[in-house]
Length: 239
Ligand code: G1P
Image (cartoon, rainbow, N blue to C red):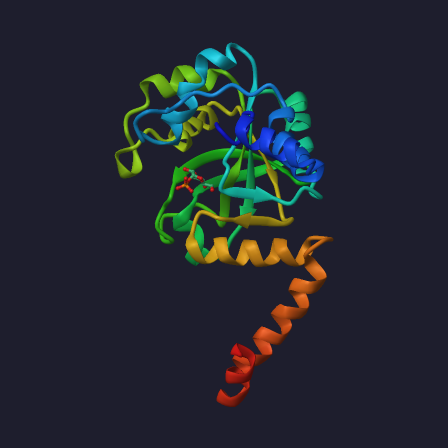
């Protein structure tokens, strides 16, 4: 919440120094949009978190973006999902094929063709199934365009996996009624919800940056060569 607010003391100090570059960088997040916040209070699950926004959203379709799931800004997923909602109504999730040994980390969807390229109809959803129970290799990733009908279901849905109110369980009810579609995504996604993936994400995004990328990539290559080399080479690199 503070990140998207003004940081008056910092802004004043930077203005006094005449550091306009950093001043702009500090002010940018507050200029991005008109941002409203709701605190979830208790960690009762993703479904509960979405329900907390009910009175803000009202009776209109809305998007849910999970902050630990990054989609590369060059991808078109976020513009395609509202288009699919416009064509089919109901709710739209995003799916990505994952190796069977990773499906237990995600909501998993049973699907059938929709007749449209890259879009499927979701016939069932299960939250974090075991590999044996998973209906497919399609994992739900953290982008949703939801019909407000989901709020009424979330109010009554009993705690599911981990004792939490699961968004996936509410969407399963909507899917049973035939009103959930999915965009199948195979582009660049970075999962920062786990420590090792977080590190991989930082390295990949750092390499991509126009300002830091070239220098960082050169350093990284040398670092990896050092890891693969002899003890002496490692010592030299460390020095
Ligand atoms: C949540 C959802 C899960 C979804 C995942 C995507 O799980 O409950 O269905 O597949 O986000 O990142 P979490 O990662 O919060 O445990």
